[in-house]
Length: 136
Length: 107
Image: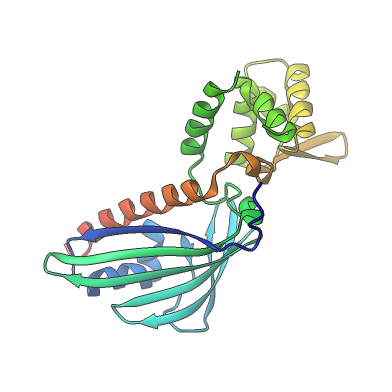
């Protein structure tokens, strides 16, 4: 393994969404809506608010860092040794919104944080099959 | 490839073992008896598979009375997982669900 134990890395996903920022903001910040696309939660759009996302595997501990209505939302995302920050950025475009998610703070020695708590197992096993097919 | 990788690959290469592990991941802790009932192989065979999974660190056992309960320890898979692509995949799929939700809202 490389000597990168203090390296911070990030995952970025961004998309053009054909809806105004205000509507997306609701989906990002109202607990019953968040649950529909992410996980059960007790989120509140208040900086400093501690909350958790819950699924079959356990809980992801979070704290709200930044709330700028319809623009930016950031919260910590800690699970199984992983310490990271998830930042949502909404930028209006003529056709709707450019929605960007960055999850930052992974380090190579925290890979176990992925755990399996969050990923789709079917997808994982599909990947594993592919890896296994290359072994031997 | 490290020995740890090798052990994990060998352990999960067997479809029956992989199915047992996946079931424990999906459904939580279970007894050998409960696992056998749906495994399609004999209890001694299930016990043997569980022992291999345990040696690889993929499952843990807990004794209670005469029963042994097994639970998954998916963290043991960490060496196999490229977390960046896995997390990217996770968020891509969350984005899909978010877009579906946005289409349904206010309609």
